Length: 235
Image (cartoon, rainbow, N blue to C red; front, side, top):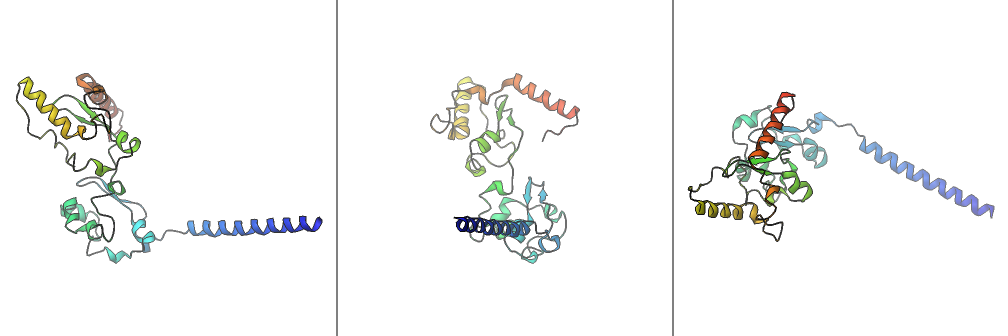
């Protein structure tokens, strides 16, 4: 009986030792110091032009095993701000195989036109449309975080990735019937692609979810003004 107990205690001790050794090794690997000279800047590179995008060197060098000269200087000039100054750091250029598109072509790495959230983040503040009616509010977070939709679910097949593109669309006359027909087509073309009472609630119901009206718009503007007065950013 005592022999069995001793064997059990010994086995538990060995198991505990092995588990502790395993955790120590993995903790040591995880705590490995990041070598900026070998892997590039540890802090993400954030572009603001033509739109906000974030790039992480570690994902490409330390994790994916790429050397610095895989991208520099043939694809990206080793000079801060050079890409933005070039004026062609766009999705169109990526599609032509420039910049990120030289690898993110759907073959070497995921296509640059997909997995938008890997580099871009959805706006935190509501998008407020003031034309053709004032005002309609759209929340990205409801659709992306709560609804689980990817950016490409709406962009660019439904909504062009260009600020003001809807307001710039062809407008209608003052006739009430013409305006109603125009607004119906507008709903069907945009939000109505999902809000058809099948995939999501129909756009002819629960109107106040999005339509905040003139009073709602004024209240929203007032809130933004207070933020500015308090030194807070609207973005």
